[in-house]
Image 1 (spheres, rainbow, N blue to C red):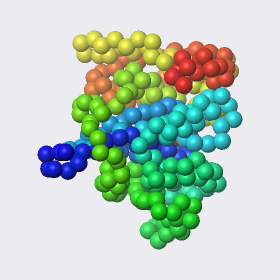
Image 2 (tube, helix red, strand yellow):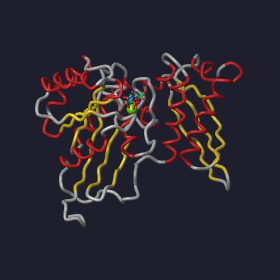
Image 3 (cartoon, rainbow, N blue to C red):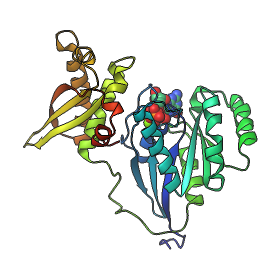
Image 4 (cartoon, helix red, strand yellow):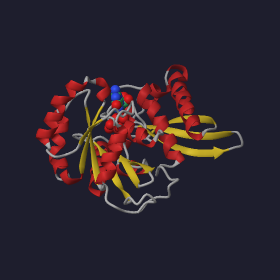
Length: 297
Ligand SMILES: Nc1nc2c(ncn2[C@@H]2O[C@H](COP(=O)(O)OP(=O)(O)OP(=O)(O)O)[C@@H](O)[C@H]2O)c(=O)[nH]1
Ligand SMILES: [Mg+2]
């Protein structure tokens, strides 16, 4: 019971859906801080990211996941597996669909997997800022035909529209239970992991074609001095030919990636940052189970 006499609720809520629908944007909006990187490219998120929201009458652990898709390569299969494991373990599943694109075959392909969890499913119809209200009606009708009797909450993760309503629906469906984390804890991500992701975000934003998907980032040293944090990080690529692309003419690409990442990291740490980046070829790492594990996959 809470002070107000309400039952306290808690549990894990998996944020799932096809790539690019706004799962990570929603996690950040729900937590009011940037925990997960966001880009216009599909398959941005590679791992599981927990964001813990502590309210007076509930503690909700939102778990962002990689997009569910037809995976062909080892790294992609691993990403999908992470999302599926998260679903299995969750108390509730929040399926996110994209109103700007409407429902696609890729969404439809998820139905057999989602129907299994029907009684713990909630749907968020995201990106409603891109649509007029009456354009949502056919999408809602289609969802009803696909899976009936599931609560659908139209939202805009980016603009924060209707997030209060989503929280209410989620909280009502959570099982009664005590807090699972200290109320000050808001994520399971270490500062290092957040920094690695912020560097990878800039690689995704500033490179094209296969390069963004061939990159992993590791922080090799993280040293807090009086007025500055000195960070050394390595950008791993999988082929020799990708190295000059990342470095750019006269080093201009790596410089621009480093500069933008440093600004983001300074916001995160609230301190001045000195960031040094190295590029290293790790031949075919995306196909190597051992290397994938090393990079947290
Ligand atoms: N207009 C609009 N764009 C949004 C909204 N939510 C997310 N986006 C955009 O959609 C794109 C993808 O967002 P992400 O949060 O990275 O999507 P994701 O589902 O986490 O993608 P993956 O990690 O690749 O599976 C980004 O360009 C976001 O800015 C929204 O509510 N409205
Ligand atoms: Mg994501």
